[in-house]
Length: 176
Image 1: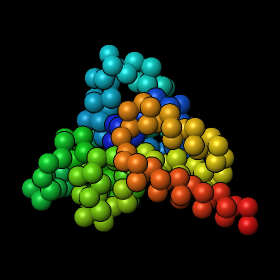
Image 2: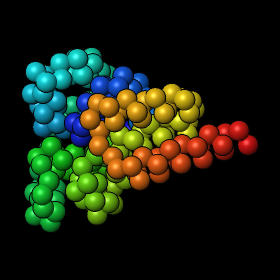
Image 3: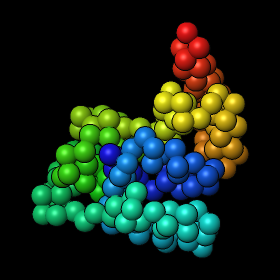
Image 4: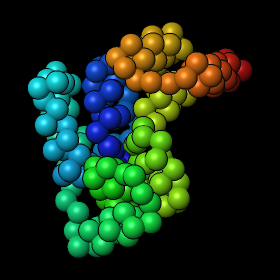
């Protein structure tokens, strides 16, 4: 179970990897604001949005912030600056629903989640978890990671190498 921002869902849809996500964190909750962000992008990401929409009400649950969630959101906004509405709603929904894991790629949202004692998970970590749990093999992991980067997911060369090193460790552990 996790609360997701738009970017992990869109990127995983772009690389046809939503199925990995659902095997690791199911169900996925998204705040209404994130659902709006995803569907507004339908002109740019038609195929991706269609893939995501197929899972709404099943593996993906759209949830509304209640009064408690709105208070939490306002508190987060006052303490943590520079977050977009969707990111604020993700963090507030996680706190409201007492869900510890949040799927975010943005650096500020990641740090804010840590500050709020939530566990932030990036899209690349979802792929690593799929490898660790043997949902995919190392070769599929590499291909999927490269495809993610070709689709515009930005990581530095150092982080790319760190991710591959972690993946190799999972692979060597499974052979032991």
